[in-house]
Length: 508
Image 1 (spheres, helix red, strand yellow):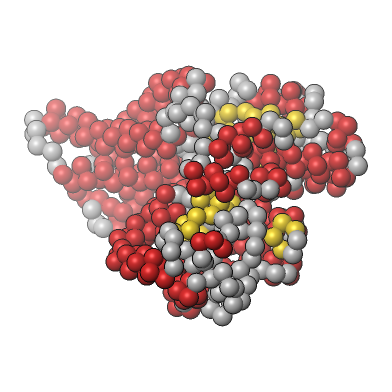
Image 2 (image 1 turned 120 degrees about the vertical axis):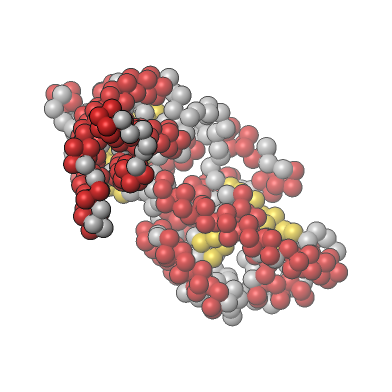
């Protein structure tokens, strides 16, 4: 924790003035739960951009092979220099099918690109399947009679040879770029005790250049100590990993006691990362084993809620909807700002530090609903029914949830999503204890971005949380959303929010 504290303090100090004042008032327990962002990571070529470039090259190779074979058959043999667009259309269809197939099986990921055997197998298999689908489409559309069988066979063989040559030429340059850190690498945290941790890192380093390895050591005395000592060490290591935000966590065998090993595995299930278990690390296995991470066999214990593709879909939807909503609701924003100013003196907006994705703090916006001298930027004091701090207009805004509309800006800039667990103030308490200290597994809800609305809200769980039972009920719905996420679930929650309204009897 000592190495994390300076980073956290620096991150909080760099907040805007109004937010820094809020951060300065945070308790030590709240600060410990909040994770700071390390901005020092170097910029590199995104893996998605590399994949797009290679997909375009593959498509071009297939189409060019078809054109080349066509001119070889017809131009050189018959002297006809015109291009039959029927052949060009078939070539384009084959190119699209090949790229779609390679993309769907993950052939453009950096890990697969660095595995020559996998590339050979995927290229041969995918191109054969794509060519087979082309033949099926021609048969169903009665278009095969227009094509030369010799052209089709020549196209298939030439495209395959060119694709394999392209991969052979690009394999080493891609490896050099990965080793030099010029391709954005994903981070793999390796958790274990010495000397097993050192052995695993030595085996992984030369075989997974597309990964940035992050050692996460646990000492032997801690692993063999009492349960409280182990839990404390795991909590400190988990906080450190939150700050480093690895894409995956690989847990090595740390104990022969199954219960103790499971305790170590479960300690990292709250992180927004894939959690893997490596059952054995031995040099002799490295020569024969084929696993998820280079030579190490691994079992996926808990996948992240949203893979990179799903994250892009969700983020794109958020940007489109939030951007359109802000434009359409601009006149309403102006009217509400004027009304708030007329109702009570002070700013129209209220800012509060809340837990975001991976426990990272962000400043959430709302329309101000309380008297300025009674506002609680820390969130330590709950809002109760008939709360005297709330203004006359504020009661209406809170009852109708119109005070939440400025959070569309939080969605647009990436702090929040339209749908997700509601963001809680970092000082939020149940009784006299912090929410995250009372409810087990609380931080697992931060494996996705917080939302304006969520599964708990459409099931009527809104308003004051004054008992542990209410807190657990909300967390149960939040965790259900994290585990069940799909784009269609987001649409269902948004539809239910609109149909049932943003307000409710517990909205005060």
